[in-house]
Length: 92
Image (cartoon, rainbow, N blue to C red):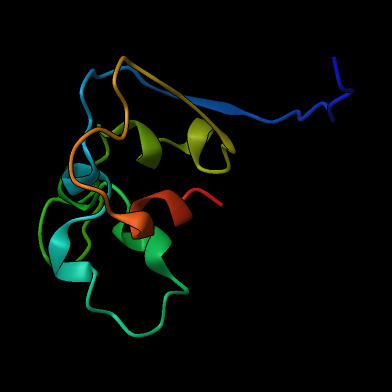
């Protein structure tokens, strides 16, 4: 077994099952030219109450204790669906 680096960070629990790439990164944001800043579109429909980026205080990513989380704990089948490579890049 190869040695690996231990990563330590705060976890954020998103325990829903079957979160697909359409929920991770909605299609309307795929046309953006600048790929930096995609993070604000992550889980867009769940994070915001409107198109003015009013945060939903009940969504786990918006809670103060998880704002700087760097490890995601998810339910089963996370990232399923259409292949959107942009969705995977949001996490890094």
